[in-house]
Image (tube, rainbow, N blue to C red; front, side):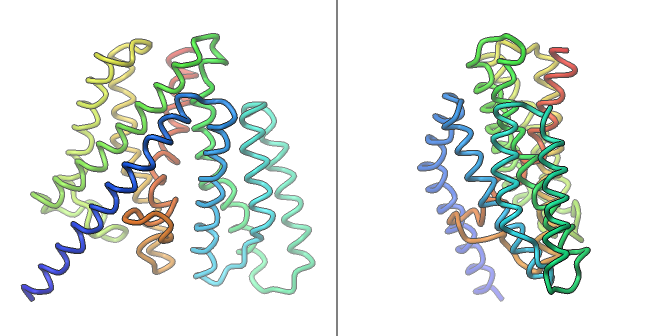
Amino acid sequence: MVKNELRRQNLDWKKLGLRVLVAIFGAPLIIFLLLYGKLPYVILILVINLAAQHEFYKLNEYKGMLPLKSIGMAGTIAITFTIYYFGLEKIWLIVLAIFYFTLLVELFRDNESATMNVASTAWGIFYPPLFFSFMILLRELPSELNMEYYLGGRWVLLMLITIWICDTAAYFVGKAIGKHKLFPRVSPNKTIEGAVAGVVFSFITVYIFHLTYIESLSLGHCLIIALIVGVFSQTGDLIESLFKRDAGVKDSSSLLPGHGGMLDRFDAPTIVAPLVYLYLKYLVFA
């Protein structure tokens, strides 16, 4: 029993080391592209969208569904670029076209569970591609508001770093002192103590950002963003865990060593980005 525990701890530290290595090489590229913005950043979001969607469809296939992956990919490409060039105004046209085309193609497929196939295809376009594409809207928001373009990069960076700090704090505090399970049916290892630590460190991170880097937002608005990130980044992780548990897998894929797949790595911003964007656009800068 002791040997098994030591082996498990060694695997945890090895996984953590791989996560750090991937972050060291991947984080600078992501930061550069999000600060630069424009089309290169959109291409990055598109790549993440397509990879995450592929993983989501694989989870559905484990449950016996047969999503129309080619339609899903085409829809993801269309949604990503439509959001960049036209914002949300034209999205409903793309979504409507995807639904119609999915129904027509499924009509001529000789497969069972047509309802589940259509539903999984459609949901795989909303989660994660449409939700995650709010990363583009958030980055481009200063252009809508006639503000300095660089501010969008700072807002996205604030969100991503706060998510990372929240996730890290929740993990280590939960491992160290966590005793009360947060949501054992979905994620048995998450604890209430870890979740509270994640929220607390989100506030600390955003406060430091406000003092040093985010002069465009008041302290009050920054703290509300901290609350959004602290609560909903962990909610995003639980949502993805729900899908993985339903499919009977631990990670969405092994694409990113130490992290799992794109869904595993970007589950939090998929849920948080739309909320931060909507808060800034309709409550802060309305």
